[in-house]
Length: 356
Ligand SMILES: [Zn+2]
Image (cartoon, rainbow, N blue to C red; front, side):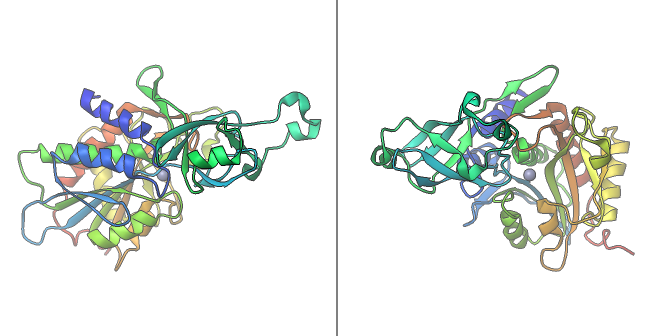
């Protein structure tokens, strides 16, 4: 991967951005895409990169990846200064005890640890059950409630301590690949399109959306704002090449075998075929997954925005979704950006995706 792209990806992943608190990541997105497109932001916190194309009656095309990640939020500080919290998005209570966290306060990040009763002091029965998130607590080392309250306010968001780790080959682990991998691909497409000699036969909007993990909220409003004819959502998808995931659940999906194209009611048939044919013609490996329902992604709200949008999903294989050690292959991200740019060149007619 290009050095500057990798440096941006790493910074984006480290930036704290639980749903509703995304601006540290959004600021990086704005800064990175600014040389390549016209940048704007809205009251929700969504960021838009716009590249006008050429041609009469050209379609409006929207790409979207969400910058928000799962996290925690401080709800209550007890008399001894321990902090109780709620999940922002789908946080697995199995994972939290014993973790180092960062509380994002008005004064900056404050370290803490999620406490846990020692195994020696647990009943046999308790060893086999999960401690509910409501019963878990963060220890910041404060002497009492008063001291904790000076440092932390109810409502502050919390992220897990995790660094960007290179594994073997081109695999990398970090928290937040869901879906900063998608936001990254959107940014890379804006960069690549801006460097094309010929203008695209379409107006391109690359959106870094917010609040996806808590109900596709930024995707809803940004789709309304852009009012696209065609939309591509870039999201992560379950890899099934880890030992404890059943292939029958999400088909045969492996890291490093290219982006995933999903099929089903949420996907416009014509747009899927365009992406699939593009991949074949340009020799970009893709994997297929099937989802007969409305997907749990921004592609869902984009498709049913206003009078309907021709929508597709380009997904990135990911192991260990919603853990602080999500794993992707860097080449899948690069190939996804390449596929989208190649497909954009083949889009010029907004009516070609109306099913006949
Ligand atoms: Zn996601």
